[in-house]
Length: 158
Ligand code: HEM
Image 1: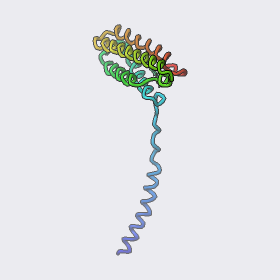
Image 2: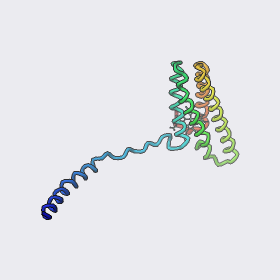
Image 3: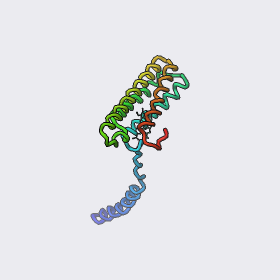
Image 4: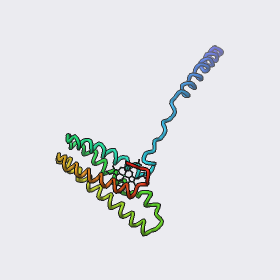
């Protein structure tokens, strides 16, 4: 009886071990980690800002369901808060302390202006005023152009 049990268990092991091994080896490899915005916190905040602004611009163009765009404008504002606590590499790389201080102030001023424009976009959306929201979003877009011209390394065309 004992011999039969031992034989049975051995046979079971012979069948189960290769099956479990095969299953384990067929499991998919882990997905690669996607690093956005060149990996910097500022880059990630900018990506988020870009996504939110894009959907806002589409909504405002249609002029429909403006109030439903509020979560997007809040997302954009949160991204600006994240961006404000960072500095562009072009600023941190400056070795002249006076120039660095000046550039830091200029960056922060532009971020504040961007936030002001986004607050105006928010008011336009909340009041169902597409014209106001559109004007404010254009102002934000102008700040993007000047901010990128001044603080973003060459090669990034967005
Ligand atoms: C509506 C306004 C803006 C939008 C939609 C926007 C969007 C973007 C996007 C999509 C990127 C590329 C992120 C990536 O590297 O993948 C970027 C990068 C960048 N933006 Fe903006 N931006 C705006 C305003 C500004 C302003 C006002 C400034 C400066 C005062 C600024 C400074 C930068 C810098 C320095 C980078 C490079 C970040 C890095 O890769 O480390 N942006 N932005």
